[in-house]
Length: 261
Image 1 (tube, helix red, strand yellow):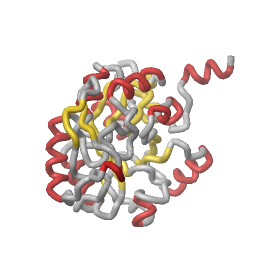
Image 2: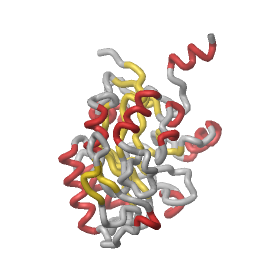
Image 3: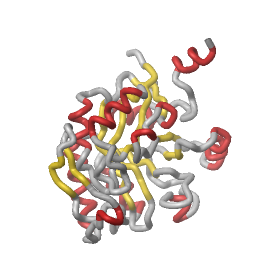
Image 4: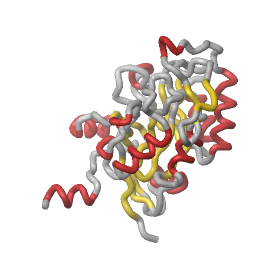
């Protein structure tokens, strides 16, 4: 078994998210990831998984694409949920939407919510507003997702809105999750303060990209994996079998070499 460093971005939006720019099509996201050397990415539109197959089809395994979702809880807390496969993603979405308020989207206000294929052909449009809280609380969502073999990551913990801390205060020690996400722009010194506040918790950083320019090698996390896959990611988040998550502010080895030469 040989482990290697891989760049991983677990929080990307597409044209399905009304707050995502229309440039966030499947081939464009794939091209940006390849340009930045990102080997594993997750498509995490708001409360929906419909465009993950499109990005996966465009990528053809480079990068490896994981279906995901940025879930908004009843308390208006954002959490990234990552799925082992599309069947689990669809099943979880069906469960989530049992408590989704039937509020229609207003494209002129919130933006379009387009469902596409791997070549950016529009195959549908989600008419229900995606940027809203579902009827489930954060604890319910985490428990349901983990019970289905998914990974749960409270999103952008350092943000003054839509984060667990901003809404409910400090995350309880027993809150069930796989890692905590911090915004990519957070200074390294502030990251170290978060580590002191939550000893024993694992942190990652993701791009939360809504624009192509936000997909960057400087806005993702370096992980030691045998190969880029959901199963390897799960092992890394648990720190098992030698897999690991490096400091989110760690440079890629080749970057360190080039900067010192």
